[in-house]
Structures are given as structure tokens and as C-alpha cells.
Image 1 (cartoon, rainbow, N blue to C red):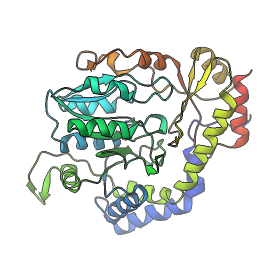
Image 2: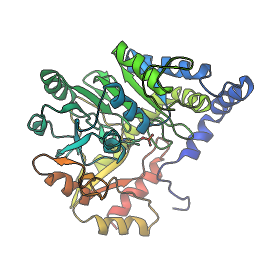
Image 3: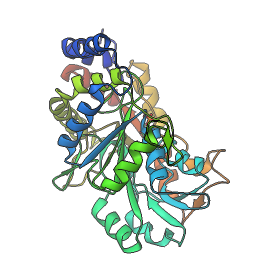
Image 4: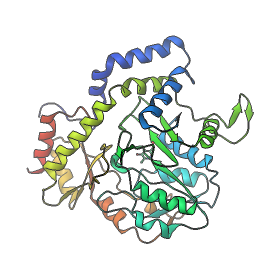
Amino acid sequence: MTKKIEFIDLKAQYRHLKEKVDERISQVLEHGQFIMGPEVRELEQKLEEYTSAKHCITVSSGTEALLISLMALGVKPSDEIITTAFTFVATAEVIALLGAIPVFVDVEPDTCNIDVSKIEGAITSKTRAIIPVSLYGQVADMDEINEIASRHGIAVIEDAAQSFGASYRGKRSCNVSTIACTSFFPSKPLGCYGDGGAIFTDNSDLAKIMREIRVHGQERRYYHTRIGVGGRMDTIQCAVVLAKLENLDWEIDQRIKIGSRYVNALGNIEGVRTLGVRDDRTCVWGQFTLLCEDREAILEKLNRVGVPTAVHYPIPLHIQPAYVNSCRIVGNLTQTEKVAHQVLSLPMHPYLGTSEQEFIIAAFSQ
Ligand SMILES: *Cc1c(COP(=O)(O)O)cnc(C)c1O
């Protein structure tokens, strides 16, 4: 292969969308409303339409989306939030930032998403919310999670940073829980050219509170009813997402097709397992991740022929120095620790060509 294989090819996407992106950005440069310009609300409306969620609030990142959600729910020190230790650090970080306690339960061995059967045993009088992560682009068992949460009067926040565009039982990710948070970090399924994110909810009271928290807790200019953050998304970044949104359906389709091609080709290889994807939902492969018995051997084999790889994520959060003493573990995290040793992500983006993909697949049997 003469052309270098990119793990995520943002340049190919830009070449494809150049006209739309350039035009959108130059419109912002012309009107000059760089903060809370018209593109901000325009994007929120388009995302409300796309997800069917009643309210979308754009924010400065996926991390900030999670933080603002927890603040809006009134999470305070020593409250408990149930999630998994097998996720990007931001999921637990925002909990700890508020002085609350991340409570980790184990994941399913095939999807790497939260194991619903472990949730109820982790609920105490201090539990305020559950944060299921739609890891690698697949929504967790949300109906079951919502049912448990409503019986206990607690909220559910979907960490949908990797799953924008995925569907679950006829609904879209970001519209299957009390609140959902997504990220527009450049490498996510819907990304901008910097940092950005969005919060979704059907609850109008929460939406109003989150809009206020986004801008320093102000109800109107210079009148602050609550403690907030500087959490707005830049107008230019909203303009970029608006341009990319026009091509999103095609891109999601490509992701699903490329994902199936990988699954079909690699599913029967000795020592390799592909991710379990449930029949009632789609996976948009925010990462295309495999489970490998001997990860080091495969990693070396792929890297030798120039196939870039990544590990999402090598060290679960309950054994990270920053969290080891500030989290609570319920049951054991056997599967979490097992998958952390096995996961390996392959190049995945909508512009990955068939011949490139064949080259990557062939590298496994060399
Ligand atoms: C990317 C990511 C985040 C954080 O998003 P940022 O926009 O980078 O702050 C949170 N959770 C998960 C699961 C992620 O993958």
C-alpha cells in the first residue's frame, strides 16, 4: 500500500465537504457574531429535529456537557453516580469535580457497555443518577436502565459522545434518557474543528437551567441566579457542524457498512472477537474496536505494515491514580479489567476505501 492509512481521515472529509464548510465559516467571519451567533440556535434546532429531542443546548465540549448536566440535577458532594470504569476519563471526572462519588459497576463482556444486572445492587439513598456510556457507538440497554431509574426516582444521563447517529429501538441516541450528552471533538462521529458538544433533554425545566448554567448561571444579562460555567460553543464551530450535518446520513451509512465488512472478515479469526451488536440497535462505530486474546501480537503485526491502531482504553478508571481512592466499586470489575487488556481499535472513518480496508484485513493473516 503506497498511500498512508489514516486512523481517522479528517482531511478526506474536508476535501469532500470543502465548499459547504468554507461557505459556512466565511458567513460567520462576515457577520462577526463569534459568540452566540445565529448558527448556534440554528444548529440546536437542526439537532432537535435530527434526534427528536425537545431541547438541544450546544456547549463547549462533551466534558462540559456532562458537567452541566450533573450541575442541573443538583449533584452535590458525597452524592453517588453510577457508571462504568471502562470509558473515557471525562465520564467520571465531572462526577469527582463536583465532589460526588463515581460508583463503578462491571460491563458486559461482548458490548463493553454497562451490565444492567449490576445496577440495582449499586443504588443507595445517595444515588442521584446513572450514566450509561454508549461505548464505541452503541447505546446500552436503555429501556431497562430507565425502568430501574424511574423506580428509584433517579435520572439517567446517556454519555453519547461516541454514538451520535446511532439508533435504539426506533429512537435515536441522545433521545433515550432524561439527559444526553454528546461531543463534537473532531474524531467523533459528528465533529467540529476544535472543541464542542451538546446536551439533549425533553424536560423543559432542566433545559432552561442548563441554558443558564452554560452562561455563568445568568437568567438575564448580569443577573446570576445560580453558579454556572463559561460553557458556550463557538459560533464558528457550530457553523462547521452545520456543514457536516448535511452529509451525516451518508457518513453514518458508510460507518455501518465499513463496520459490517470488518465484522464479517475478522469475526472468524482465531483469538479475535468482534463487538456484540444487539439486533434492536445500530452501532455507528465511533471506534471500530475488537477484542484480542493476544493484543500485543496483533498490534505489532498491524503496525509493521503501517496500519495505525489505538487502544480505547488501556487502564480502567478504578485503578487510575486519580480515582483509586475516590471511587466506589460495586461487585467486582472482572470483565472491565479483562476487556481493558483485549481491546484494539482499527482505522474507522466514512472515507475508508474498500482497498484500504482489504489491506487492513489482510494484515491479520500475515
Ligand atoms: C470524547 C468523550 C468525552 C468527552 O468529550 P470532549 O468533547 O472531548 O470533552 C466523554 N465521554 C466519552 C465516552 C468520550 O468518548
